Structure formats: structure tokens, C-alpha cells
Length: 303
Ligand SMILES: Nc1ncnc2c1ncn2[C@@H]1O[C@H](COP(=O)(O)OP(=O)(O)O)[C@@H](O)[C@H]1O
Ligand SMILES: [Mg+2]
Image (cartoon, rainbow, N blue to C red; front, side, top):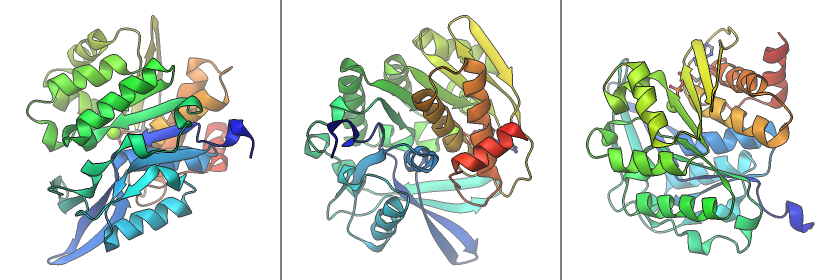
């Protein structure tokens, strides 16, 4: 095997879990998930060698995640397994969403970057971090250190805080640390409001103050998104689609942006943004966290 293709070019670290969603009074459906895992699947599906780095248990839910990761074409050398309980997101109400997490002493917390295949850091170009993994210790500290180590080696860092109720108290230092490490930050309008508890312009100013050189993507569902890079501020609306559901739309949009940055560096920021928004919209056409193919995204771009 050629040394330059041996390892993934993109790694999403952390945030692999099972969503257990109420399907009736006492009936539940399980779905492999996690925002970080969705971003990894998005980039893999578009066509780049990708891994999702983390740790699973040895139970039935972890088996499902393992098998779905293989099916998504992820590099399985980055997924570790330990005999500890799985991380579950119990979504007991969907409209409006109400959820809590189960995973005390969970398998995810045992993730050990020192056991990843030697040399991978020389190959990877972008790494992505975010969501609840950063507030589950000791995993949060492990991931923050990994992000810092990667950055030190010239790997670009992507960060999507993805607000969850676990961040209601004491998240500010983590947000500040990860934002400062990031080359690219993705937030939704809801993330901004819930993280900073103020109006959007004010929240965005506070986020940008944490790292003025980071590129920032703000998405607003079906409304116009904004991409900010230095003095450039670009706005664009996502393509209109028939929406099956919006699960994983944000993950597909940041995955699309990362894919565009890694495969078409000649594009303008406006073109990168259009690709990201088409990827997000394409994810909405199917139920669940659908990872759109390149053909699906291109069709929407040209449509
Ligand atoms: N109703 C929609 N119609 C078309 N595209 C959508 C819709 N909802 C989301 N998207 C796409 O997904 C992107 C991210 O959605 P958003 O809801 O802002 O993020 P998140 O999933 O993180 O909350 C949007 O910028 C857009 O490209
Ligand atoms: Mg999001």
C-alpha cells in the first residue's frame, strides 16, 4: 500500500452513541448515532478516506454501531472496544425534543489515542471535535489534548459545539479552549442562542472574540447561512427540498464543507458554502441522519 494512502485524511473524534427514541408508550427504537459519528459518515460517503475515533462497548448497541461503521466505510482501526456500558441518548419525547444520557463509567470514556495506529497523525489533514464527548470526563480532556497535539503538527481542527443540555452549566472553559484551537467552527442559530443566552449578533461576536482567525459557519435551518472568514462575510440560502426530517442536517453540512475544503481548495468561500448547504439540504430529504452521496449533493447544486 502506498504510504500516502495508508491512513485517513479525515478523522472525527468522539461522539459515537446510540439514540434510543420513543416509538410508542413503552416502545423504543435504537439508532446508531452521535454528531461526530454522523460527520465521519458524511465525509466518508462523499468519498474521502475517513475514520471515527472512539471507544465502544461489547454489547448489542455497540455491535450495531460497529457494523454500521463498517458499512459506512470507516477505518475501523480507530474504533476501540472495552467491556464497559454503552453510551445511550434516551430521547423520550421528540416534539419538542426531550432527552437524557446514560453511560456512567461508559465505554466511550475509555478512548485512548495512544493506542491508535502509529503514524496516523502524519497523514490526517483535518480532525473534527464536538458535542457531548467534550463534557464527559475524562474523555473531554483526552479529546482536547488530542486536538491540541494535532494542531501542533499542522492538522486543521474543526469544531461544532452542538449544544446539548449537559452544557447548561460550566461549559464556558471548554468552549473557549476548543474555539481557540479551531480553524473552522460550525454553529447553528440555536447553538448560539443556547450557548451565550443573548441575541445572535452578540453571541456571534463573543464566539469570534474567542478566536478571530477561525472561519465560522452559522447555519439557520432552511434560512440563510453565513460564512465568515476574516473580513469576508458570505450569506447564502440552502437549496429548497422536500424535508423528510432534519436529523443530522448540521452534521452533513459541516461534513460537506470539510469535504469541499479537502478536495477542491481552488473553490471560493462562496462555492464551499454552497456545497455545504447543498449537503445539509440533501440530508433532509431522507429520514434519520442520512449521509448524502456526492451525486446527490451535486444534483442539488446544479438544480
Ligand atoms: N428545512 C430545511 N431545508 C433545507 N435545508 C435544510 C433544512 N434544515 C436544515 N437544512 C440544511 O442543513 C444545514 C444545517 O441545518 P441546521 O438546522 O441549521 O443545523 P443543525 O442540524 O446543527 O441544527 C442548513 O444550513 C441547510 O443546509
Ligand atoms: Mg448542529
